[in-house]
Length: 168
Image (cartoon, rainbow, N blue to C red; front, side):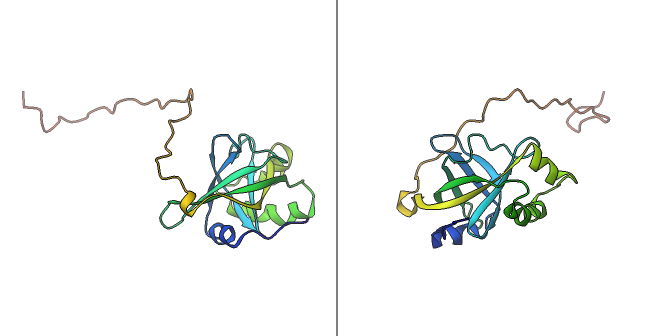
């Protein structure tokens, strides 16, 4: 497998987090739940799972970690992205742990991940792009991504007179 040992700062930061922000180099970041195991982060993506837009095997990705206590950005590290192949020894070891962390997992999740989804291993390269003094000091808020989704709702019907209304 040839995995390298992650830097101590990355390992310490990743031990307590359940969610990180993933971004392809130069692309937009998406929130993703993960499993931190054996010095690597494992994420699941695909239909019915979290979208991992732009995150692909063989291409580096940026992993931004926030403090579980203060929710402030702690660091960003560069990851080597590899796909975990269904049926491999690593698949058999990691997927049951991912299923245990997955909220509201369907009974056929393992088969779906093997068929139309993907399980990715994000291994630290040792490069930290943001940490300490190099963390951004400005607001990084971005406008929401355009979507055709809307919330349809009706105004509630009043059954009784409002206290502000005067009696007739």
